[in-house]
Length: 328
Image (cartoon, rainbow, N blue to C red; front, side):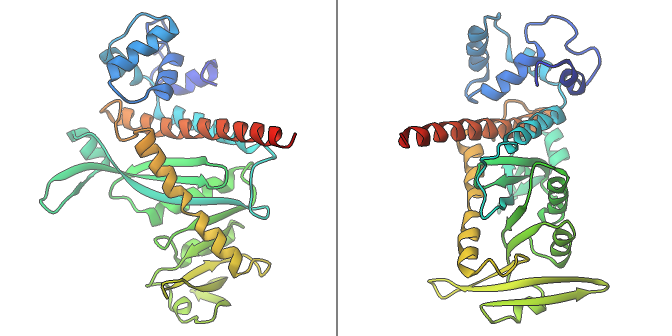
């Protein structure tokens, strides 16, 4: 993809960019961003140039060149990769459903006025401000695929942006039978209505301030109908008593072929999106950004998803090789 003229045309911020044979061609910039280990940027550039047989370039030259690349092009690159992975008929499912968890996480950004103005900031108890952004990822928890990810203002709302994500997944022909696993920060009448309208299934943990009709259910498993204005949803309310005597309330539009034991297994799998954030923050060192411009922040975020999906592909290939040899 990155060697195609079509992709280059879409990726350039201006027509004249990458029109001459420079020290850092377009493909090398993308490749470097994917492979850098986020240590000393100049040292990483020197290693990369030595491996590719190119003259050394300065970090200033790299920073200038990367500004000619639209972050949206890297996001599209990740979407292409995830779409290709999804064409594999051997992807894991749970009784035919793709398990997709969505969650947000706050990222710490470099501290400068442009980033603070664009993304916003958080303050601690001593009123010290930290430039921050809200990341959201839709993650296939059984196959370790980042299907979709976006970076928003720190002040943005996960409950609002979840609608963008479910509609994005609906558009994809390759993501068949999605089952959304969501935590208690997301449930609302409008969200469950939209998921049902999209013919998408869900399993969501209810919060303590859920709708009155939901809170009133005390049975282990009960189907209810809720009406607001002219809209109506039908769902099952599942009450699961945990070992600490706390009752976990789950909401779903799955049919009765799924029982309480299924829901215990399914909701536990949601946790894997938490480990995906651990991976991009602590293994990929996402918050050690390789630039301090708005463009660079978006590029680094989308690149982290590309790397995650490359890793997922390699993992699946190796597991299949292991299983093949174990069967001999």
